[in-house]
Length: 161
Image (cartoon, rainbow, N blue to C red; front, side, top):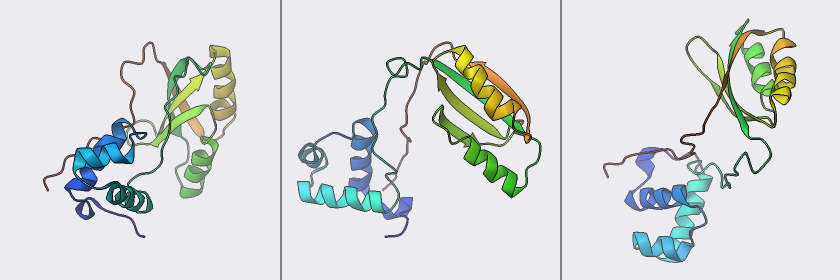
């Protein structure tokens, strides 16, 4: 199945997505009751949303402190050279376990990384490997998160259908 676009979704799909975004372990029967569809219809729609690329994955969000990685760092990275091969090389380099999220962005920086580490020494080692030793990193800036005020993975959307 190809990629689904917003116009391919109806109000049932949107209602199902809203429930799954809050808690993807909600039983199909409960989702069906909330959106007035049979369990089988909900299951078919979810499969279609997964195959169509709307649902990218099903994950559990683990508390970084519990995982022994209580320090969250935001790193802004500026490339020296921006040709496509260098860009792809950095995308690959930044796809390491310490990097929770990586964004290719506009503005002063080329990348924004969200990094979780156990200690500042661990971040120092990470910065040395990823930034100082990479000839294509022109500069980087580190922002240490003092408090995780709001963290989420929901993608708010509105539909007029």
